[in-house]
Length: 41
Image 1 (tube, rainbow, N blue to C red):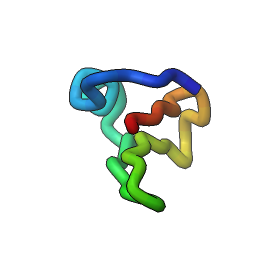
Image 2 (cartoon, one colour):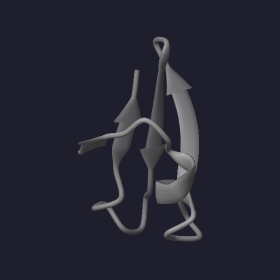
Image 3 (cartoon, one colour):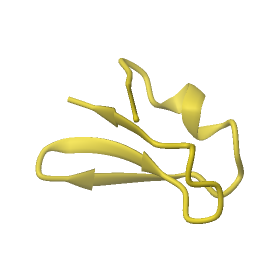
Image 4 (tube, rainbow, N blue to C red):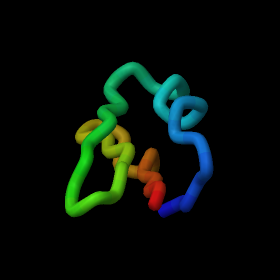
């Protein structure tokens, strides 16, 4: 999992990427391509 300042660039890399907020943190998750994971905050 990458920890990034800006998640928008990661989200654009695959069409199934989703931006999710959990417990004050922002995550990028992808159900089909599991390698696209990132966290912010």
